[in-house]
Amino acid sequence: MTSEVLSLVTNTIDNEMETLEKVRNSVDDRYHDVIDAILACRGKVIFMGVGKSGLIGRKLAATFSSTGTPAFFVHATESVHGDLGMIEDRDIVILISNSGETREVLAPLPSLQVIGAKTIAFTGNLTSSLAEKTDLSLLIPIDKEADALDLAPTASSTAVLVVGDAIACTISELKKFSKEDFAIFHPGGSLGKKLTQ
Image (cartoon, rainbow, N blue to C red; front, side):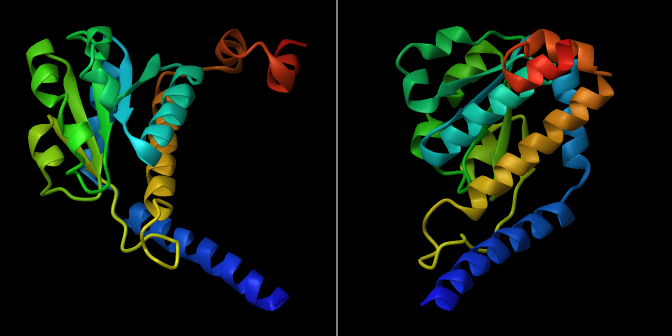
């Protein structure tokens, strides 16, 4: 039983590592376009999604904010019930959907177009409705999810998280974001203590 359990654990990790290798090999000029757009943004970067993609978007907004790029998360469902009022024409909205066909993620697009915010898709399908209706799209490819049923958002959500982290760290480095800057945004906890001593 123990060896079977360990085998299941390592198989899942292997599946996610294979996905990340596929994502790494897919990096192209689209990343340059997305990074240029974020660097040129005069407003904030807003992440939008639902379900597991929403949770990843919330984490990425926190990572961007703490590394020098002001960002926040708006739940896609709540966005069409008034929260679109948080968004301005100088902002960038990154919409996350592996399929690119998630109804709740597509719903805000007409209003975002009227508002004038630039839109970016993080998706596993460049021929999807989301990719076709946004200003820029980034392919985050996966062959299968990491669970045995190939259903639970596992490899796909990990891939989006890693891509988002890579973009946030790249932008932070290009902005020459320093330890002193980080300390201003993160004075609490052991990290804050380490940076302010």
